[in-house]
Length: 202
Ligand code: SF4
Image (cartoon, rainbow, N blue to C red; front, side, top):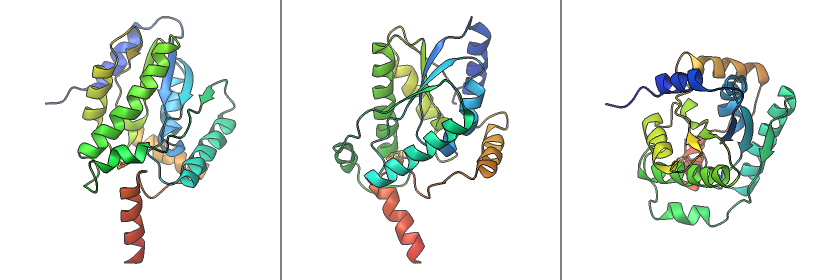
């Protein structure tokens, strides 16, 4: 049975003093809308856009542009860090190839982006790191949180979370509709891109 990650999240919030620093991995604007507003009450946030899984580069840039648009709208002091787009990333996914979303390829993909985010957070002395990805119904919150726990071995703590809980997904969806954000129709990699293209043809 998986842990109640939302309960662990709330317990951690009860423990924090002041406004600790949080390195937040953000995959796209639509998934970050509610988590950013929620977390900003407790943490000093730096956003890390580590998403070389997105095929193509134009799509990666489009999603980044939409995230920047949302941050402008929020008018906050949150900093956005954009690591270089890694052309070789898609090569790593090739060893898994086409398979249903949520399988081994995705576990590899979540873990790789989270590990890179953690490395940046640890190197720069952040108190916490986490990812917004658990907001998505397409992503496995149990895998994500287990990976976060495994990855965070140093002083930077992993912040357990399941942002879809406590009606988080409903709030996020409502905010998305109000903001009229660009909402991509595939997760990111070339495999999900191909599936979305074939659905359009049928
Ligand atoms: S479906 Fe999404 S999470 Fe899974 S491998 Fe592709 S880009 Fe990564």
